[in-house]
Length: 206
Image 1: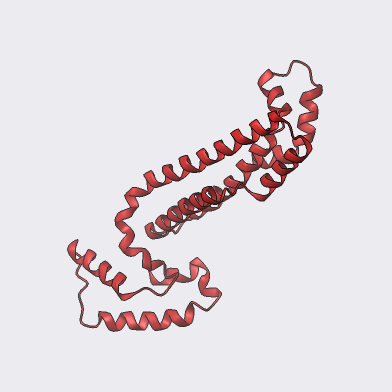
Image 2: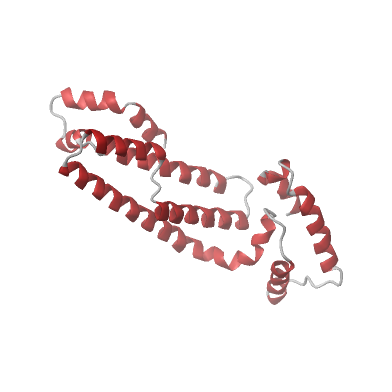
């Protein structure tokens, strides 16, 4: 991520350097001469931001399996949504529009068309990859409500109780629904609090 940021910040000086330097490898020279190369880097930067943020969340010292599952699920959904809306990042979009306006040639049209195809392919590949590696977390879906990001329905808690009992963890108690009502009433008040929206504020429950 820092390397991509540095290249983008120094794009013009780097381009000028390789344009004037001698014995530059052809692949580098062609890369900086192409009008679409910077647009690829901007697209890369936009999506690296998404992955970097979620990787940092997963790598925290204290993170539960439920939270990891939620992060993977949300990242996958974001990628699918970006694909369906053709979201490539605002800077990328503006740079591409500028290229269209300033250089309206058949070559530019071909380059942009190829770029759009490859961005869709990226979203497909990335979301499928996450889906593949998220399968092992699917068995924990009965615990999703424990993130307490919303007031859980009784049916979800009931499914968790049945899952635990089927796996040898005794949880059946006469007052369990009463405890659920205490939690429900508590959350209805707390969910309106900004402080409660912080992930760390919920860890006291688990």
